[in-house]
Length: 207
Image 1 (cartoon, rainbow, N blue to C red):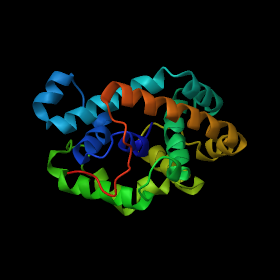
Image 2 (cartoon, one colour):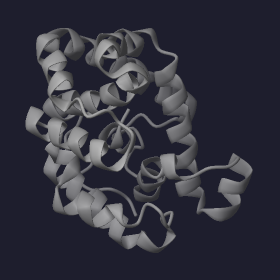
Image 3 (cartoon, one colour):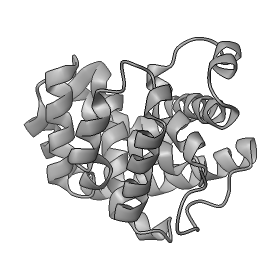
């Protein structure tokens, strides 16, 4: 799961959304997390870790990842995280009563509001996230390709965007079906584990 799915799976509390978003930038035990961050944000970080663990062990996600392994090797899972965000954005109205653009803008406002408590090494990403409207950009393949290009420049992600997009296009319906099955499964798992089961049915997030 990438940015959009992590935030969406947090429910409607803004600090929990922010905590889930920053999860990859926060290390250490939940004891240290609980001591450092507000409770709602710490909950989001714990939720992030749960989602990552659940995804890593799920056979449907593994099936999608296997399609990209010949091109990307160990980075195939990273690609599928982004691609699953594409299918969430594309099918957004199946999961949320809030317009995707409004959802994204609400989240960007939360990042600005809580900027000072974000991990320091994450803070420089926030302006780029907002300017590019990254969450909404996943809606089309062009936005997915742009995300891969950014990853190529800033991480060790392989410079194989064209081949990755080709693989996506060749298996588009199968991956979309994988996503829909997997996402219903993770919605149920998050509801059971965290009691978060009213996904984006309100017009705004709670602060």
